[in-house]
Length: 271
Ligand SMILES: Nc1ncnc2c1ncn2[C@@H]1O[C@H](COP(=O)(O)OP(=O)(O)O)[C@@H](O)[C@H]1O
Ligand SMILES: Cc1ncc(COP(=O)(O)O)c(N)n1
Image (tube, rainbow, N blue to C red):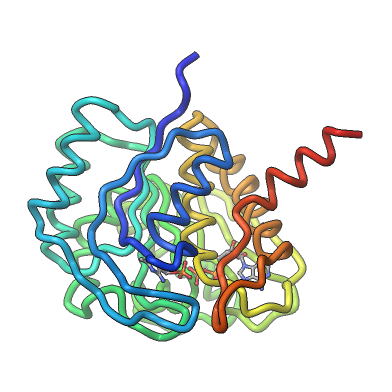
């Protein structure tokens, strides 16, 4: 059987913890062939984002075309998209190639506080891209921005899921990393049922790229033909291991350990 293939359309993180780099590492760890279309180059490390260089719309769409017309991904993920022109162009390409297994991670702000999406681009995300999403994966501040109300309780999080579902996303996951609860709970809404995925909160500041990695793991599993429930479950386990077995790199918000999940699996299989 041919290997599953996934395409990430996102920004490059020179520090290797988030963006394209996190996505490709995650695809590889989950036995999926990874491909990329870069939207912007960031000069970035664990301390912060030092510079952002968006690519032209043509540079983005030509990469997508090259991948689409030869390699035909089974699933597609979007991450940092930066501007409304880039978002609109990507939405057109998704429609052109009739991609349906599309995971939209609506990246807005890096952990250090730098903006990775222009303010004017939020409307394009809502109007053009989220309606094409098989799954949209905001964190709590991103979900608040998209739905226009504050999310403090589980009930409000459920309402936000419903509002994002109304925008056209077939499944919604609101991630719980930014809540201040002891457990970290990700909430999946598939249009009918809410599913909670909870784990103990690891006390660490090595969480750079957690959202990218989680979304990439969902994309990898969808590329293999798994259901959204199975994909989110696997992604939660993958990011949990990656956060727990930190590499301790850098002076700021360090990256997660993309190898941790595989290494644990290998150890379990050894016995
Ligand atoms: N401290 C933590 N301990 C365990 N899991 C976490 C922690 N922080 C985030 N996660 C998990 O990492 C993923 C990303 O969550 P979140 O931080 O909300 O997103 P983002 O990185 O986009 O801001 C989610 O699956 C969440 O459950
Ligand atoms: C190029 C790029 N894309 C995305 C993020 C967000 O990272 P996080 O997953 O920690 O929110 C980032 N810092 N850089």
